[in-house]
Length: 441
Ligand code: GDP
Image 1 (tube, rainbow, N blue to C red):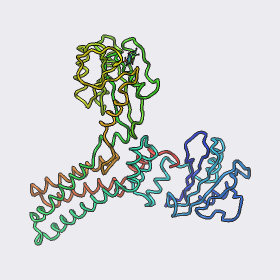
Image 2 (cartoon, rainbow, N blue to C red):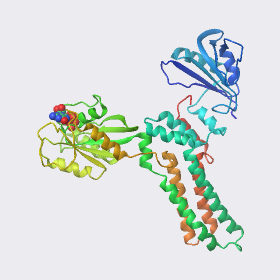
Image 3 (cartoon, rainbow, N blue to C red):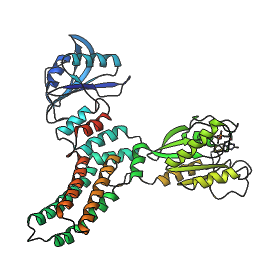
Image 4 (cartoon, rainbow, N blue to C red):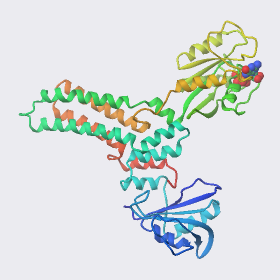
């Protein structure tokens, strides 16, 4: 248990209906009693009892408020926790927080409340990370996956893998300890298929594309020649005037970005410079950016003006787009159409025709991310590491290397899995994870 008491504002900065100051540590109650005067003595400072009263700084009333003390271990951190619910003004909140700091509380570091919950054994690391994911979640899908992890989804999967691995290691150890009774070949016959199966299960749980989409959103690059309507399409998709639309070719030179949520999933669109052979330096840079954004995109929207005939450049763009997951978008369907275009989604950013169908097509390509066993990139990275140690163990077994070598690989795999749940974790890694949290959580 920590012997310091930390304090922070737990609600977002700025004006709000309520602002909450949170304290955790052995002095939580003592500090609360110094800054809060309950209106009634009945049940005053009883654990988990919400009190009404006034917040004071050096005897002066600064706000009317509610306060609660949650005695250890029945609290978020398993320490004594106090919360003071003030009116949301920034000034009052900051006065009270400074008063608490003056009385001996320490400013909380980002994520320190959750870190204490982890250090005190209330949550494992993957659940602590889920708390952060829930705070950060920008769409329903991401929130759903985070809540599953908070309920222990990732932990359950990893714990099962750890159990199987420990069992395999026990088999290896038995053969090492009693070579006369359990011959290595015999042990290999029993253990090798299990090692391979476990490695396969861990790899199958690593859908990085889906994890990235949940954490950051789906990246959609809009590409096409100048004037085909890319900026207009971006505005249509975002339902706002984000990109500047003009009819002078080559105006969109930088990448314009915008995000929206489609059916629970965040989609990040980027409208790139028109791909066009050009001697102009700025446009040249734009073309490079467009090619780059295609490289990192989950989906390319290749946009063409179906009112004019397909040009050499159009076919080049189509060729480039075909190297990625792409949708062929034929814009300006409201104008008389040239018939020779290949099949694609016919839209008009002017009349709105085909826009809903386009959104559905984008959403279908994204699929249902977050249905797998793991949902965080950090966990997948470790699961892959474990799978690779397991396949080294399997290789070792296949070429009949001594069992102590096999055991080393298996231990490496076990260590990597322990880093998911936090059993094996360095202070540096903990700091790195919790510093991404916000202060007050
Ligand atoms: P970008 O250079 O590809 O980003 O193209 P813009 O979005 O700037 O559009 C170029 C021109 O085409 C503008 O004058 C738009 O008003 C026009 N435009 C865009 N979409 C449509 C459409 O669906 N129908 C018609 N008729 N004009 C459009």
